[in-house]
Length: 102
Image (cartoon, rainbow, N blue to C red; front, side):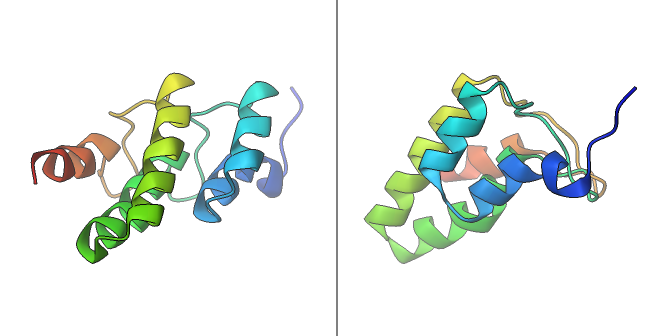
């Protein structure tokens, strides 16, 4: 069974960290695993939920919030697991629910 190097395993996660929507679309169209995990067992959905969600929401930054929503829609549309558990037992759903109710 062929292994992936670290950069290939986190390519989608890196694109999400960079908010590179075009790269995210390209990777998803190529069939990349939307639920791939990094060394902390984070998925791309963990990254967008924790790294960008609270900042955009707190700052009222409509452009960042719009990018976040677009990335969320892309990941969820590709089958991202909202219940994926990280090494420290966090899941994206636990971040999304408070944001949706504010």
